[in-house]
Length: 416
Ligand SMILES: C[S@@+](CC[C@H](N)C(=O)[O-])C[C@H]1O[C@@H](n2cnc3c(N)ncnc32)[C@H](O)[C@@H]1O
Image (cartoon, rainbow, N blue to C red; front, side, top):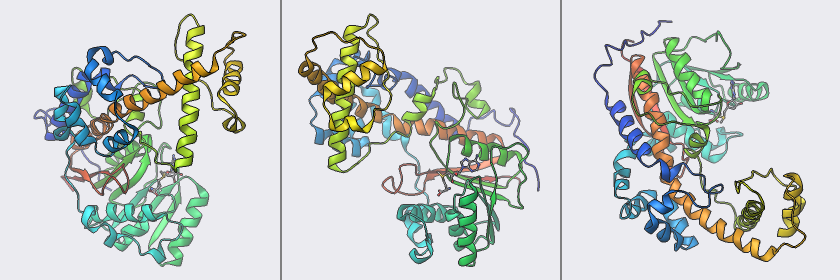
């Protein structure tokens, strides 16, 4: 296996378009930090409500169905909010990335349904769209954090001569190898912790990762480029998983830049936070509990000297069928909050319901920053790969409705 030469700082003197896009997002996110940093569940009166009172009022009067609609159409929502915060009109330009071929050819490249054993329908189509976006394939590919090797088997169908897989869960490896044998696929899954030192690479020139979480996909970018793989194709997800403390950017250019966004795990989590579309009964139940939690929070703030948010752990399910008062008594005991002899429970419940309504609308505003934060991370990955000597193609491999984690970085080494 040949080893890639890291590009020296001299080579990087000219900023690439990925760096420029990262820079633009970075500055925009820094400029609007007050809008996305405060966590609505924890902060009833974020600073921006004073800075943009018209925005706070406008959000306040949105109905539930309008919130759902805007959440589905964030680009239109950004243009609407831009009437009150003009710089948000840059949203579309900042988040625009090209569509890769998986959008049109994903279902053709997917495994046939009869072959897609143990594979949820969406995963079959996601793997197909990923594979269609990286064809033509090199001969020997490694499926990184492969689970049962669904992507590996899909890549075989798209022309890979042999695909290896790294996966640390022995049961998945066994099941995956059994499936590959059953269908005669040239796939071999290997039980391997990808975070281990001194990885022993199989004879491959292409590393592919579909939805390896956080540090796992970052490990492929770093270890794969260091090992000299000619090609790396990565669709990242769960950016917040792995590591502790402040987030460290990958690329030297971003690390050396001035005015870099200070990113913590809460910010990373926002990049992948989705609105859960649960059945109506579950939604009603979680709305009720949310109001209870916020009602208890308002009550405890009124009793404490500091008036700060108090995190309450998950509650026993028996409380779900109880009432607000029972919930508060349980939470007070857990958090050692001394309740007065007389509490106006209906008042605090009404406060909780009002806070819940407001938190939903403030969350909607934060959702505008999810994709920009995600791209801030992924553009940095692209710049890092360029610094390692790769030519990078970044785009979406499928529609958001198939998976919201639809970005794909496809990097080919220029010297191989
Ligand atoms: C989100 S799943 C993605 C699986 C597969 N790529 C897919 O799209 O179906 C992540 C996989 O990474 C595996 N994994 C987690 N940590 C790992 C590690 N340190 N080394 C190897 N595999 C790991 C998990 O067991 C899981 O199968």
